[in-house]
Structure formats: C-alpha cells, structure tokens
Image (cartoon, protein in one colour):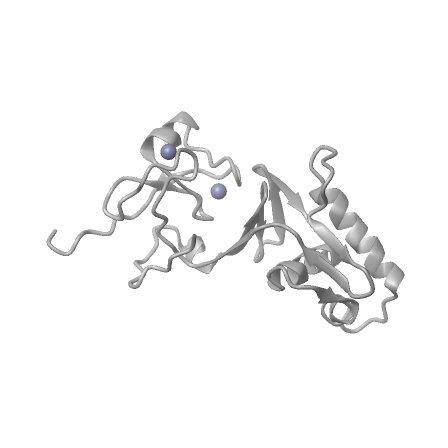
Length: 183
Ligand SMILES: [Zn+2]
Ligand SMILES: [Zn+2]
C-alpha cells in the first residue's frame, strides 16, 4: 500500500527524492539509470527494451496497443510488427525467472500486450508503515532502515541481512525519523 506522507521531510539521500522506480515481482526498475535489478543484481537494458518495459509499466495493467508501442519506442523510425514482437520476446527472456511458466507480459490477441504483475510505483520519499520482510509495524518516529529505493525494513531484519537490501542490493541506511507533534 502506498501512502504519501502529508509533509515530506528532506530525505537524507537526495537521490531517493528524485528516484522514479517501479517494483514488481522480484524486480526493481530504476528509470533515471535505466537499470533493472533482478534480486539485487543490476542488469542494464538496451534503450528499446527499456522503453518497451516502461510503456507497459506506465499503462498500469491496461492493454498497450501496437500503435502506442510504435509511437513511444520507435518515434522517429518505422518499425514493423516483427520489431515489436522481437523486443517483447527479449524482454520476456530477461523477466523470465528460472523457467517459470507464467510470463509477466501477456499477449492480448489482436490488440497488443499488457503487464500481468502487481506494480508499485514510487516518486519521492514515502514512509512505509511495515517492515517488508517480517511485516512488523514501523512508527514514523521509530527506527527503520531504507535503501535508496525506499525498500523499508525493521532494525532486526536490517541487521539480519547485514544492512543489504534484498531487492536492489543497495545499502540500508537509517530512515529519517518523523517526530510526533508533542515531541
Ligand atoms: Zn522486519
Ligand atoms: Zn532496495
């Protein structure tokens, strides 16, 4: 669940404020860096593959028509359906997890494609209310640890994972605390 804090504090990590990231399944997509993290391992994407993925994510689960792909991914070139099919195929291979059956990219016959996983979109610093590993509740004024993509963990889990985020591989740092009104 995404809850935007009403008063956004200055984040300790300036990159977190600018980051536009998508998280789905076991992946984190860093849009400004054009890097896909697969369980913490960075996988740079080619320009076109990156754009195909972004178009699908931006559609928020809706069907993306072929014309829309041509417009967004190949704006100044003429692309054929074969180009599109090929790039969808490349992306499916990247997203395929150890021979799992279900693809994250679903074909919609005669129309196009849509993304078939729950996607979390992040812009700016959001204070999460629970640890992503053990689900312990986290108070805005209490101790919590975050990576630069705001994956959030309690102190115990953070220590147990040696302060490494399991999603992006980044370092977990103490989250800036938000004090209660009377404090
Ligand atoms: Zn925890
Ligand atoms: Zn992370």
